[in-house]
Amino acid sequence: MLETAFHTYQRKKVINVNVNVALAGLLAIALAKLPVAWVSEWIGKDHRIAIVIVTALIDGAADFVIYYMLHWVANHWKPLKPRTEAEKAHHAKKDNFFRDASVIQFQRYMLSPVFYVIAVGGHWALMKYADVRHSWAFVFAYTTAILVTRIIHTIWGLRSGTLR
Image 1 (cartoon, rainbow, N blue to C red):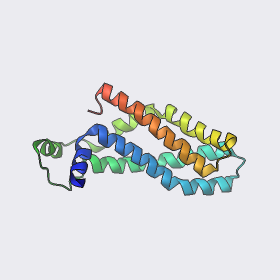
Image 2: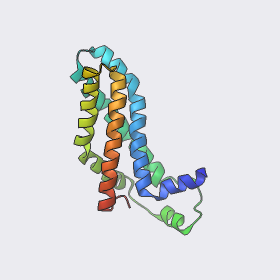
Image 3: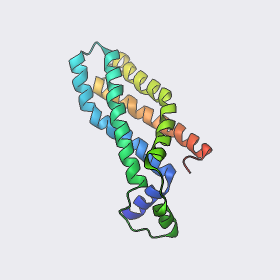
């Protein structure tokens, strides 16, 4: 069953892009939560704008690196022997790693205003109006931004053909 799931993940672009982007985002949140807590203590809890900006930079850098690693796993790592003709054809493809991954990253970049309005705005609003701790406000707001932009990007990718 895991083998079949992994083959499907590698063959179906709409699945691997959404899994990769969501997983990269969630892993970046998990990895950035502790540094966000440290930075918010270091900067001072009253400097919400500075906390939000530094948080966005930490999360963005982690997300970028993790996405490229996951893209390589999904599209270029061949640990399992192909079982069907479709899998053999997928394994035989010689896509340019950086071009392929960068197309998706460019589309994500185009959606970044939506992402950051939700993520940064939500982070700031949760800290200011709901009195949520800085690091948890970051987790809630950025997770919501990931979900919303995954829906928009999937619709865009299916309509434009980049996720087929």
